[in-house]
Length: 417
Image (cartoon, rainbow, N blue to C red; front, top):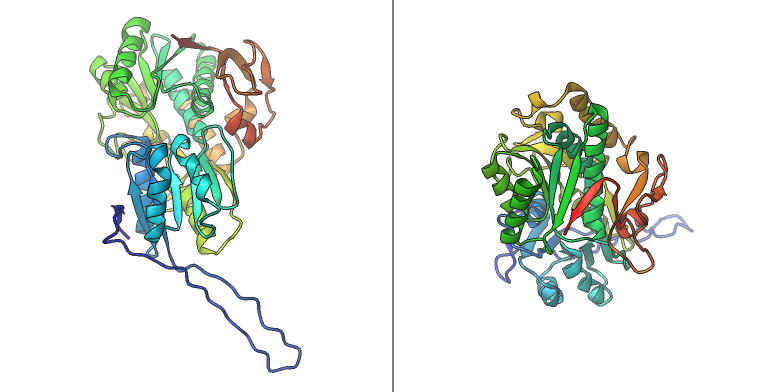
Protein backbone atom coordinates (compact mmCIF):
# COMPACT_ATOMS: atom_id res chain seq x y z
CA UNK A 1 0.00 0.00 0.00
CA UNK A 2 1.18 3.51 -0.64
CA UNK A 3 2.57 5.62 2.17
CA UNK A 4 1.41 9.15 2.87
CA UNK A 5 1.77 11.96 5.35
CA UNK A 6 -0.90 11.64 7.98
CA UNK A 7 -4.29 13.18 7.43
CA UNK A 8 -7.79 12.27 8.49
CA UNK A 9 -8.78 11.73 4.87
CA UNK A 10 -7.45 9.35 2.26
CA UNK A 11 -6.07 6.70 4.58
CA UNK A 12 -7.24 3.09 4.57
CA UNK A 13 -8.00 1.91 8.07
CA UNK A 14 -7.99 -1.70 9.13
CA UNK A 15 -9.89 -2.55 12.26
CA UNK A 16 -9.12 -5.39 14.52
CA UNK A 17 -11.04 -8.53 13.61
CA UNK A 18 -11.49 -11.16 16.27
CA UNK A 19 -12.11 -14.65 14.92
CA UNK A 20 -13.69 -17.04 17.28
CA UNK A 21 -13.88 -20.66 16.20
CA UNK A 22 -16.00 -22.87 18.37
CA UNK A 23 -15.53 -26.54 17.67
CA UNK A 24 -18.45 -28.42 19.10
CA UNK A 25 -17.66 -32.08 19.52
CA UNK A 26 -20.33 -34.63 18.70
CA UNK A 27 -18.75 -36.98 21.18
CA UNK A 28 -19.45 -36.62 24.88
CA UNK A 29 -16.52 -34.92 26.65
CA UNK A 30 -15.13 -33.10 23.57
CA UNK A 31 -14.19 -29.59 24.81
CA UNK A 32 -14.36 -26.47 22.59
CA UNK A 33 -11.04 -25.12 21.28
CA UNK A 34 -9.56 -21.94 22.71
CA UNK A 35 -10.49 -18.82 20.70
CA UNK A 36 -7.71 -17.55 18.45
CA UNK A 37 -7.31 -13.80 17.77
CA UNK A 38 -5.84 -12.73 14.43
CA UNK A 39 -5.34 -9.15 13.25
CA UNK A 40 -6.35 -8.58 9.63
CA UNK A 41 -4.28 -5.44 9.07
CA UNK A 42 -2.33 -2.64 10.68
CA UNK A 43 -1.30 0.96 10.24
CA UNK A 44 2.33 1.77 11.05
CA UNK A 45 2.77 5.40 12.12
CA UNK A 46 6.28 6.87 12.36
CA UNK A 47 6.95 10.17 14.05
CA UNK A 48 10.15 11.61 12.51
CA UNK A 49 12.10 14.02 14.67
CA UNK A 50 13.46 15.87 11.61
CA UNK A 51 12.48 16.56 8.04
CA UNK A 52 12.71 13.52 5.77
CA UNK A 53 14.04 14.99 2.55
CA UNK A 54 17.79 15.47 2.55
CA UNK A 55 18.46 13.54 5.78
CA UNK A 56 19.96 10.10 6.18
CA UNK A 57 18.32 9.17 9.51
CA UNK A 58 14.69 10.10 8.94
CA UNK A 59 15.13 9.28 5.26
CA UNK A 60 16.04 5.69 6.18
CA UNK A 61 13.03 5.39 8.52
CA UNK A 62 10.71 6.78 5.83
CA UNK A 63 12.06 4.33 3.25
CA UNK A 64 11.49 1.54 5.77
CA UNK A 65 7.85 2.50 6.23
CA UNK A 66 7.32 2.61 2.49
CA UNK A 67 8.97 -0.78 1.98
CA UNK A 68 6.79 -2.32 4.67
CA UNK A 69 3.64 -0.95 3.04
CA UNK A 70 4.80 -2.02 -0.41
CA UNK A 71 5.38 -5.59 0.75
CA UNK A 72 2.21 -6.01 2.81
CA UNK A 73 -1.18 -5.32 1.26
CA UNK A 74 -2.76 -5.26 4.69
CA UNK A 75 -0.38 -2.62 6.13
CA UNK A 76 -0.51 1.16 5.72
CA UNK A 77 2.26 3.62 6.58
CA UNK A 78 1.57 7.16 7.80
CA UNK A 79 3.95 9.73 9.25
CA UNK A 80 4.61 13.11 10.77
CA UNK A 81 7.79 15.14 10.27
CA UNK A 82 9.67 17.51 12.61
CA UNK A 83 8.04 16.11 15.75
CA UNK A 84 9.37 17.51 19.01
CA UNK A 85 8.74 15.99 22.46
CA UNK A 86 5.82 18.36 23.07
CA UNK A 87 4.04 17.07 19.96
CA UNK A 88 4.79 13.35 20.30
CA UNK A 89 1.69 12.44 22.31
CA UNK A 90 -0.83 14.77 20.58
CA UNK A 91 0.20 13.52 17.14
CA UNK A 92 0.19 9.92 18.33
CA UNK A 93 -3.32 10.19 19.75
CA UNK A 94 -4.55 11.85 16.58
CA UNK A 95 -3.14 9.00 14.47
CA UNK A 96 -4.47 6.35 16.87
CA UNK A 97 -7.93 7.89 16.62
CA UNK A 98 -7.73 7.41 12.87
CA UNK A 99 -6.58 3.80 13.05
CA UNK A 100 -2.85 3.64 13.79
CA UNK A 101 -1.97 0.37 15.54
CA UNK A 102 1.81 0.81 15.86
CA UNK A 103 3.30 4.23 16.69
CA UNK A 104 7.07 4.78 16.70
CA UNK A 105 9.18 7.80 17.63
CA UNK A 106 12.35 7.67 15.56
CA UNK A 107 14.58 9.33 18.16
CA UNK A 108 14.74 8.70 21.90
CA UNK A 109 14.31 12.29 23.04
CA UNK A 110 10.97 12.64 21.26
CA UNK A 111 9.90 8.98 21.32
CA UNK A 112 10.03 8.47 25.07
CA UNK A 113 6.82 10.42 25.85
CA UNK A 114 4.91 7.57 24.18
CA UNK A 115 5.49 5.47 27.31
CA UNK A 116 3.10 7.82 29.11
CA UNK A 117 0.12 6.69 27.00
CA UNK A 118 1.01 3.00 26.62
CA UNK A 119 -1.41 1.96 29.38
CA UNK A 120 -4.15 4.19 27.95
CA UNK A 121 -4.03 2.31 24.62
CA UNK A 122 -3.30 -1.31 25.59
CA UNK A 123 -4.12 -2.64 22.09
CA UNK A 124 -1.56 -0.37 20.42
CA UNK A 125 2.16 -1.13 20.09
CA UNK A 126 4.38 1.86 20.81
CA UNK A 127 8.07 2.08 19.99
CA UNK A 128 11.05 4.35 20.45
CA UNK A 129 14.66 4.34 19.33
CA UNK A 130 17.24 3.59 22.02
CA UNK A 131 19.90 6.20 22.78
CA UNK A 132 20.76 5.02 26.30
CA UNK A 133 17.47 4.74 28.22
CA UNK A 134 16.10 1.18 28.21
CA UNK A 135 12.67 1.82 29.76
CA UNK A 136 9.98 -0.51 28.45
CA UNK A 137 6.39 -1.54 29.10
CA UNK A 138 4.39 -4.51 27.89
CA UNK A 139 3.41 -2.61 24.74
CA UNK A 140 6.25 -0.02 24.68
CA UNK A 141 9.04 -1.48 22.57
CA UNK A 142 12.60 -0.19 22.25
CA UNK A 143 14.64 -0.76 19.13
CA UNK A 144 18.03 -0.20 17.53
CA UNK A 145 20.12 -1.94 14.84
CA UNK A 146 23.68 -3.17 15.38
CA UNK A 147 25.06 -0.49 13.10
CA UNK A 148 28.49 -0.85 14.67
CA UNK A 149 28.94 -4.05 12.67
CA UNK A 150 28.75 -2.24 9.32
CA UNK A 151 30.70 0.70 10.76
CA UNK A 152 33.54 -1.70 11.58
CA UNK A 153 33.67 -2.73 7.90
CA UNK A 154 33.67 0.94 6.90
CA UNK A 155 36.56 1.49 9.28
CA UNK A 156 38.60 -1.20 7.50
CA UNK A 157 38.10 0.69 4.22
CA UNK A 158 38.85 4.10 5.75
CA UNK A 159 42.00 2.85 7.48
CA UNK A 160 43.28 1.42 4.21
CA UNK A 161 42.50 4.53 2.15
CA UNK A 162 44.09 7.27 4.24
CA UNK A 163 47.42 8.52 2.91
CA UNK A 164 47.95 11.35 5.37
CA UNK A 165 47.13 9.01 8.27
CA UNK A 166 44.41 11.39 9.45
CA UNK A 167 40.71 10.48 9.55
CA UNK A 168 37.99 12.89 10.73
CA UNK A 169 34.52 12.40 12.21
CA UNK A 170 31.98 15.25 12.27
CA UNK A 171 29.85 14.15 15.23
CA UNK A 172 26.62 15.23 16.90
CA UNK A 173 27.25 15.13 20.66
CA UNK A 174 28.52 12.62 23.24
CA UNK A 175 25.89 9.94 23.87
CA UNK A 176 25.98 6.17 24.28
CA UNK A 177 24.47 5.75 20.81
CA UNK A 178 27.03 8.02 19.13
CA UNK A 179 30.00 6.68 21.08
CA UNK A 180 29.06 3.06 20.40
CA UNK A 181 28.77 3.69 16.67
CA UNK A 182 32.04 5.61 16.54
CA UNK A 183 33.80 2.85 18.43
CA UNK A 184 32.81 0.30 15.81
CA UNK A 185 34.35 2.54 13.14
CA UNK A 186 37.47 3.10 15.25
CA UNK A 187 38.08 -0.64 15.68
CA UNK A 188 37.90 -1.16 11.92
CA UNK A 189 40.38 1.66 11.29
CA UNK A 190 42.78 0.29 13.88
CA UNK A 191 42.60 -3.27 12.53
CA UNK A 192 43.39 -2.03 9.01
CA UNK A 193 46.24 0.15 10.31
CA UNK A 194 47.73 -2.75 12.29
CA UNK A 195 47.52 -5.07 9.31
CA UNK A 196 49.16 -2.52 6.99
CA UNK A 197 51.68 -1.15 9.51
CA UNK A 198 50.21 2.36 9.40
CA UNK A 199 50.10 5.09 12.01
CA UNK A 200 46.61 6.58 11.97
CA UNK A 201 45.12 9.53 13.87
CA UNK A 202 41.35 9.66 14.40
CA UNK A 203 39.87 13.08 15.15
CA UNK A 204 36.33 13.67 16.46
CA UNK A 205 34.76 17.09 16.76
CA UNK A 206 31.23 17.58 18.09
CA UNK A 207 28.64 19.89 16.53
CA UNK A 208 26.14 19.90 19.43
CA UNK A 209 23.10 18.45 17.66
CA UNK A 210 22.10 16.04 14.92
CA UNK A 211 21.13 18.47 12.18
CA UNK A 212 23.07 21.74 12.00
CA UNK A 213 24.21 22.06 8.38
CA UNK A 214 26.25 25.27 8.75
CA UNK A 215 28.08 24.08 11.86
CA UNK A 216 28.68 20.64 10.31
CA UNK A 217 30.28 22.35 7.31
CA UNK A 218 32.53 24.48 9.52
CA UNK A 219 33.78 21.46 11.45
CA UNK A 220 34.35 19.42 8.29
CA UNK A 221 36.42 22.26 6.84
CA UNK A 222 38.39 22.54 10.07
CA UNK A 223 39.20 18.82 10.03
CA UNK A 224 40.44 19.06 6.45
CA UNK A 225 42.38 22.32 6.64
CA UNK A 226 43.79 22.15 10.18
CA UNK A 227 44.14 18.40 10.75
CA UNK A 228 44.92 17.27 7.21
CA UNK A 229 42.28 14.56 7.15
CA UNK A 230 41.87 12.83 3.80
CA UNK A 231 39.02 10.52 4.85
CA UNK A 232 35.93 12.12 6.39
CA UNK A 233 32.76 10.69 7.89
CA UNK A 234 29.95 11.92 10.11
CA UNK A 235 27.67 11.10 13.00
CA UNK A 236 25.30 13.93 12.05
CA UNK A 237 22.40 14.10 9.62
CA UNK A 238 22.92 16.81 6.98
CA UNK A 239 24.79 16.57 3.69
CA UNK A 240 27.25 19.33 4.60
CA UNK A 241 30.24 17.10 5.49
CA UNK A 242 29.81 15.30 2.18
CA UNK A 243 29.74 18.64 0.36
CA UNK A 244 33.06 19.56 1.97
CA UNK A 245 34.62 16.21 1.04
CA UNK A 246 33.49 16.68 -2.56
CA UNK A 247 34.85 20.24 -2.71
CA UNK A 248 38.17 19.29 -1.08
CA UNK A 249 38.69 16.18 -3.20
CA UNK A 250 38.98 13.76 -0.27
CA UNK A 251 37.28 10.46 0.48
CA UNK A 252 33.95 10.36 2.27
CA UNK A 253 32.39 7.46 4.20
CA UNK A 254 28.59 7.60 4.43
CA UNK A 255 26.16 6.67 7.19
CA UNK A 256 22.62 5.35 7.65
CA UNK A 257 21.82 5.05 3.92
CA UNK A 258 23.41 4.34 0.56
CA UNK A 259 23.72 8.06 -0.08
CA UNK A 260 24.81 7.65 -3.71
CA UNK A 261 22.31 4.96 -4.71
CA UNK A 262 19.22 6.25 -2.88
CA UNK A 263 19.78 9.99 -2.77
CA UNK A 264 22.16 10.60 -5.67
CA UNK A 265 24.36 12.63 -3.35
CA UNK A 266 27.80 13.05 -4.91
CA UNK A 267 29.26 9.94 -6.59
CA UNK A 268 31.71 7.10 -6.07
CA UNK A 269 34.64 9.38 -6.93
CA UNK A 270 34.04 10.88 -3.47
CA UNK A 271 32.02 8.28 -1.55
CA UNK A 272 34.29 5.31 -0.86
CA UNK A 273 31.62 3.30 0.99
CA UNK A 274 28.44 3.82 3.02
CA UNK A 275 26.53 1.69 5.46
CA UNK A 276 22.84 1.19 4.92
CA UNK A 277 20.30 0.68 7.73
CA UNK A 278 17.15 -1.28 7.01
CA UNK A 279 14.83 -0.22 9.83
CA UNK A 280 12.17 -2.22 8.03
CA UNK A 281 13.71 -5.42 9.46
CA UNK A 282 12.89 -4.19 12.97
CA UNK A 283 9.49 -2.83 11.96
CA UNK A 284 8.56 -6.11 10.29
CA UNK A 285 9.40 -7.94 13.53
CA UNK A 286 7.00 -5.65 15.41
CA UNK A 287 4.33 -6.04 12.76
CA UNK A 288 4.52 -9.82 12.71
CA UNK A 289 3.98 -9.94 16.46
CA UNK A 290 1.13 -7.44 16.27
CA UNK A 291 -0.64 -9.23 13.42
CA UNK A 292 -0.28 -12.52 15.29
CA UNK A 293 -2.16 -10.97 18.20
CA UNK A 294 0.85 -11.17 20.53
CA UNK A 295 -0.05 -9.43 23.77
CA UNK A 296 3.48 -9.63 25.18
CA UNK A 297 5.85 -8.70 22.32
CA UNK A 298 9.65 -8.59 22.61
CA UNK A 299 10.32 -5.21 24.20
CA UNK A 300 14.00 -4.70 23.28
CA UNK A 301 14.90 -5.31 19.63
CA UNK A 302 18.65 -5.14 18.94
CA UNK A 303 19.00 -6.78 15.54
CA UNK A 304 22.16 -7.12 13.46
CA UNK A 305 23.59 -8.43 10.24
CA UNK A 306 22.41 -11.98 10.95
CA UNK A 307 18.79 -10.77 10.97
CA UNK A 308 17.07 -9.99 7.68
CA UNK A 309 13.82 -9.60 5.76
CA UNK A 310 12.69 -10.21 2.18
CA UNK A 311 11.52 -7.07 0.36
CA UNK A 312 8.58 -6.92 -2.04
CA UNK A 313 10.89 -7.54 -5.01
CA UNK A 314 12.31 -10.70 -3.42
CA UNK A 315 15.61 -9.16 -2.30
CA UNK A 316 16.76 -10.34 1.12
CA UNK A 317 18.41 -7.58 3.15
CA UNK A 318 20.18 -7.82 6.51
CA UNK A 319 19.42 -5.17 9.13
CA UNK A 320 22.63 -3.29 8.26
CA UNK A 321 25.17 -3.71 5.49
CA UNK A 322 27.86 -1.84 3.59
CA UNK A 323 26.38 -0.38 0.42
CA UNK A 324 27.26 2.14 -2.29
CA UNK A 325 25.61 3.06 -5.59
CA UNK A 326 23.09 0.21 -5.12
CA UNK A 327 25.81 -2.41 -4.67
CA UNK A 328 26.48 -4.39 -1.49
CA UNK A 329 29.44 -6.12 0.14
CA UNK A 330 32.92 -5.64 -1.30
CA UNK A 331 31.29 -4.66 -4.59
CA UNK A 332 30.09 -1.54 -2.77
CA UNK A 333 33.65 -0.24 -2.42
CA UNK A 334 34.03 2.63 -4.87
CA UNK A 335 35.62 1.50 -8.15
CA UNK A 336 37.90 4.53 -7.84
CA UNK A 337 38.91 3.54 -4.31
CA UNK A 338 39.25 -0.21 -4.84
CA UNK A 339 42.66 -0.09 -6.59
CA UNK A 340 44.02 1.92 -3.65
CA UNK A 341 43.05 -0.71 -1.06
CA UNK A 342 45.42 -3.65 -0.53
CA UNK A 343 43.96 -7.06 -1.37
CA UNK A 344 44.32 -8.30 2.20
CA UNK A 345 41.95 -5.55 3.40
CA UNK A 346 39.39 -6.28 0.68
CA UNK A 347 39.55 -9.97 1.58
CA UNK A 348 39.15 -9.13 5.27
CA UNK A 349 36.10 -6.94 4.58
CA UNK A 350 34.49 -9.82 2.69
CA UNK A 351 35.40 -12.38 5.34
CA UNK A 352 34.17 -10.35 8.32
CA UNK A 353 30.96 -9.40 6.52
CA UNK A 354 30.21 -13.05 5.74
CA UNK A 355 30.95 -14.03 9.35
CA UNK A 356 28.69 -11.33 10.79
CA UNK A 357 25.84 -12.28 8.46
CA UNK A 358 26.30 -15.87 9.65
CA UNK A 359 26.38 -14.68 13.29
CA UNK A 360 29.78 -16.28 13.94
CA UNK A 361 31.91 -13.15 14.51
CA UNK A 362 31.40 -9.74 16.10
CA UNK A 363 33.95 -6.92 16.55
CA UNK A 364 32.66 -6.01 19.99
CA UNK A 365 33.18 -9.55 21.25
CA UNK A 366 36.58 -10.16 19.67
CA UNK A 367 38.27 -6.91 20.68
CA UNK A 368 39.27 -5.65 24.09
CA UNK A 369 37.73 -2.33 25.17
CA UNK A 370 40.44 0.00 26.47
CA UNK A 371 39.23 3.43 27.55
CA UNK A 372 40.54 6.62 25.99
CA UNK A 373 39.58 8.50 29.16
CA UNK A 374 36.97 10.54 27.24
CA UNK A 375 33.27 10.04 26.77
CA UNK A 376 30.07 10.82 28.65
CA UNK A 377 29.59 10.72 32.41
CA UNK A 378 26.44 8.78 33.28
CA UNK A 379 24.78 8.54 36.66
CA UNK A 380 26.40 5.55 38.32
CA UNK A 381 28.69 4.98 35.33
CA UNK A 382 31.72 7.29 35.29
CA UNK A 383 34.11 7.44 32.34
CA UNK A 384 36.86 4.85 32.95
CA UNK A 385 40.33 6.39 33.30
CA UNK A 386 42.53 6.35 30.21
CA UNK A 387 44.21 2.99 29.68
CA UNK A 388 41.63 0.99 31.68
CA UNK A 389 40.71 -2.35 30.13
CA UNK A 390 36.96 -2.37 30.63
CA UNK A 391 36.29 -5.55 28.64
CA UNK A 392 38.74 -8.29 27.79
CA UNK A 393 39.21 -9.60 24.26
CA UNK A 394 36.86 -12.52 23.56
CA UNK A 395 34.36 -11.50 26.24
CA UNK A 396 30.86 -10.89 24.87
CA UNK A 397 29.26 -7.71 26.25
CA UNK A 398 25.57 -7.85 27.10
CA UNK A 399 23.06 -6.03 24.94
CA UNK A 400 22.01 -3.98 27.96
CA UNK A 401 25.59 -2.83 28.54
CA UNK A 402 26.15 -1.93 24.88
CA UNK A 403 22.87 -0.04 24.65
CA UNK A 404 22.97 1.87 27.92
CA UNK A 405 26.46 1.91 29.48
CA UNK A 406 29.08 1.98 26.68
CA UNK A 407 29.90 5.58 27.53
CA UNK A 408 33.62 5.90 26.72
CA UNK A 409 35.70 6.35 23.60
CA UNK A 410 38.15 3.61 22.76
CA UNK A 411 41.84 4.29 23.08
CA UNK A 412 43.42 5.96 20.08
CA UNK A 413 40.94 8.73 19.27
CA UNK A 414 41.42 12.46 19.83
CA UNK A 415 38.36 14.47 20.86
CA UNK A 416 38.78 18.06 19.67
CA UNK A 417 37.41 21.00 21.60
